[in-house]
Amino acid sequence: REGVRLIISDHRKNRFLSDEEHERIEGIGDDELWKVYARGLTGMIQGLVLTNWDICDALPPMEEWKMSCYGLDFGFTNDPTALEHVVLAHGELWVDDEFYETGMTNPDIAARAKDAGLGRGDIIIADSAEPKSVGDYNKFGLRCYGAEKGPGSVEYSMKWLQQLSKIVIDPVRCPDTKKEFSSYEYERDKDGELISGYPDKNNHHIDAVRYGTELIWRKPGQPVTSKYVSRF
Image 1 (cartoon, rainbow, N blue to C red):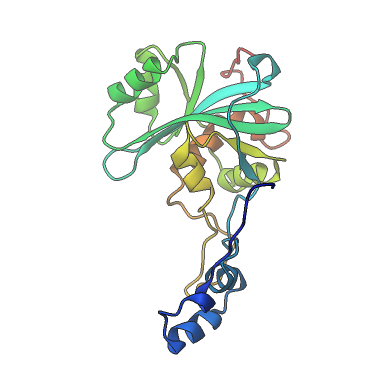
Image 2 (cartoon, one colour):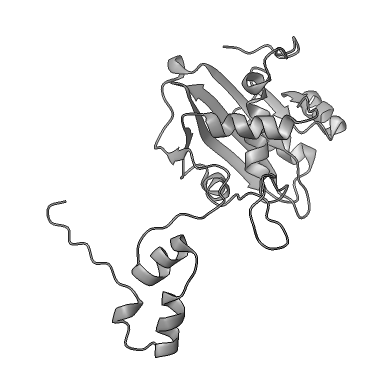
């Protein structure tokens, strides 16, 4: 771009490094890590599960939305609670809001959701492992359903997310979501080799997005049940 000068620096110009340190950097075996550390270039983490995401400044206009829903992944002490707003528009999935905190009780979560403007007109699909919590949110004036899990549901929903043309994340409103999407990797075996499993760790936002999109990622032949009645 006019008026901009690009400078790329790497270890070869660093006179404070020893010969051994230069040799160690040049000897990095991973091609992507070598690009970053030996040549100062941009690399890509190997083994990322989701690579089809991008960032945005704002959602499309509401009249262009095809689906709007909220996904909720429970936490408490060590694991944070994650609530995500997801929208389907232009054949792309948009994620534009989150909250992500530890130590939240059900009344805390309900109050936070209502402060954000959620009410009976907004569908929340939550982790069905806690049916009492799902019931509590309905008593608090929200509209919450438990996700309908089943054999293979994690694998199917993850593959559905992967095949989307794009997942668009607002990095200002959803910084932790962006961080999680950019670092979530496949399982590795004892030798550090990638295997095709989806680890159940550091994926609270991803789980919330999976729950929130359950209305549309079901397998063919498994229609959305009548309990979900969207306003769209």
